[in-house]
Each structure stands twice: as structure tokens, then as C-alpha cells.
Amino acid sequence: MLYYKTLVSINNFKIIRWPDIKKDVENELIVKCQQGNLEAYKMIYEMHSTMLYSIAMRMLNSKEDAEDVLQNAFIRLFNNIKNFRFQAKFSSYLTRILINCCYDHLNKKKSNHQEIDENVLRAESQDELSLSLEKAIGLLPLKMRECFILFAVEGFKQKEIADTMEISEGTVKAHISQAKAKLRKMLGEI
Image (tube, rainbow, N blue to C red; front, side, top):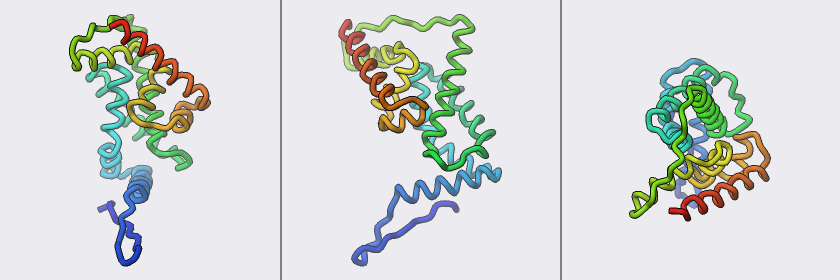
């Protein structure tokens, strides 16, 4: 099996360094994927699909659309993994693929003349407030929404977002700040 443990001995105690293991295992899996190993590809999917699905759900506000986009992102990964050169974090590379798939999906939807629902529901309970917040996030402009989701929901650092989106860190900060202000305003009207 591909999983292994790296042990560091400190005062006769063995300490497992999981972040190092994850990165080492992930790099090993990527190399195997580049060689055409489908089992390694399946493991990459299992390692990253939950996080990517979460991002897609928040970007698209639709379970079915998020599932389709997630599937398309992994197909693109499968077709292009040979291009990954280990110069960036793999999660950033994969997130970029997913976000591009989201853009493609939204552009396709827009060309089909489907409108985004711009009505935010009035919240009387916590569940309704949560639903209103999700809808409000969905109403943010696309780049702003992307920065906000990656930062506030997925926990990416601003530098990682800048690298993933190929924009400056200052632009990321501005998008996040503007998103917070717009959300306060939208939710303040509830």
C-alpha cells in the first residue's frame, strides 16, 4: 500500500509527522497518477473531493451543479496531471482547476439565459439565517465570492489565494474586505 509512516525519535518517543507524511504520500500518488495508475488517482480523489465539493457548492449554490463541476475538475486533472511540476502546492493547483470549471459552468449557464435569484430570504431562525448567508454569498460578484469562500470558509491564507487565483495579495485583501461589507449590508436588510 502507498501509505507509510515517517517516525522521528525524540527521547526514545516516536513521533509521527502527519503533515510530512501527507505531502510525501500525496507527491508519491501524483507521480503514480502521472504514470497512469488509476488506483492512485482514486486516492487523490478521496483526499481532495470533500474540500473541492464544498468550494463548488458555495460558488454555484446548487448540489447538482457542484457535483457536475467536481466531476469535470477531476476529469481535467486526469487529462492534465502530467503537466503538474511540483512547483506549487497540489491543493492550489487542484483548486485552480475547480475554479476554472466553475467559471466555465457559470458562463455556460449565462449563455443559456438563466438568471441568478437575487432575493435574499428574511431570516427568523438560525437555519434561515444560514440559508440567507449562503444566498447572500452567492450574490457576490464572482471573483469576490471566490476570494471570500477560499478565505472565510475554506481557511486558505491570503497568499495562497493570490497564488491560486494568479492575482496580487492586495487584490485578495480588497475582495475579502468588500465581500464582508456587502454581506453585512445584505444581511443587515434582513
